[in-house]
Image (cartoon, rainbow, N blue to C red):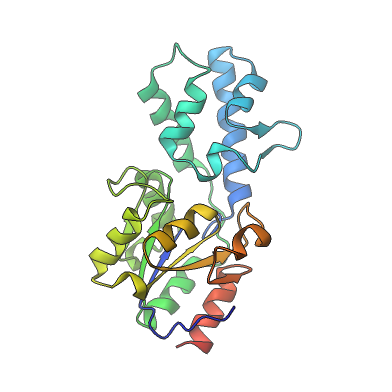
Length: 237
């Protein structure tokens, strides 16, 4: 489906699986925290892996894992059920520190990507179900934070995807109407949030979901943000 982007003035992006490679980042993070927590707590590694649905044989998160679309607090809660003697806040803080330390792998060079979109007049934002602190750290490390008009995480106070509220917060902050904004993401949460907010939903295939899963909910589907950028910069602007 080809969509007329002539009315789109704002682009709101998901982070993991959209801007950054999900597998390289989150499988690495999960392997590390499971190993370290198991060693520190004495809780069986398989038990911990099962709590967040991580396959120890393939060393990958399962498609239904809470890590994929859940919030940082939800992931902490899933692990904490196997660690009743651990302080919840301490565990949450520890997991967040490891997220910040974990290397991020850009899907494409993000600085030039955002600079090109900015030069065409688009207002830009990132809304992730990750925590705001780690989102800011990742975007600063990528050299793109200053190019963004809006950054929000699951704990910023606007709510979480698939609800519309965090997307509408971007619309309000940038003084755009919802139908002037496109939400770009790799999951059903992103697309459902877009439609709940009255925005355009753009899917990219660099996350865990398949094209078949996403296309029925998306206005357009692209292999990655690279192809989206080409479309926006050459065909619609």
